[in-house]
Image (cartoon, rainbow, N blue to C red; front, side, top):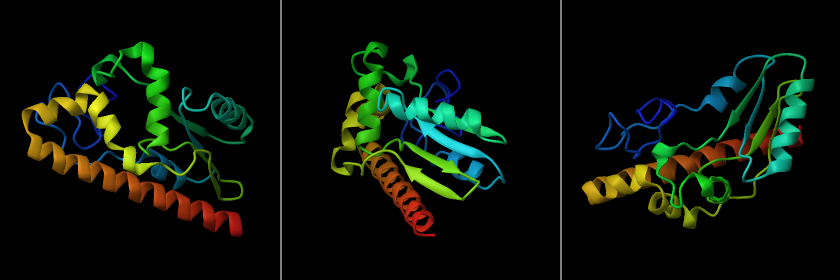
Length: 175
């Protein structure tokens, strides 16, 4: 959630939030794709716990860009119910990138190039996120069947999203 534990357009499918105790059923908006469609906007996604150097590089590039810049930073909150609490949030950030829940990437509108900074995800371990965060685990406890359905939808969306950006990167690197 991005609103203090409430369901929003940034909440992923299956996430349990204050006003969505049975889970969220639709996928989140893709702010990265939306921003890429706006001319002259530098867009990047970072996760400090996953890759500090990439985070620093993004801030430097964003500052140097002649035009607007948007940095989408993964920032956990208490409402996610991360296993081990917020003190383990840096480890959680790394896990989310490793399994493909988050993608570290940079889009430069000057040459229409996209660079993926994270390795190819281990989607086989994607379920780890859903077992470690209460926002997903709560739905599993309440309704196992619904949890499985929304988990699969979330995983499928993550794979499609990664493949979309990987294809875009390949297209822009060849040109």
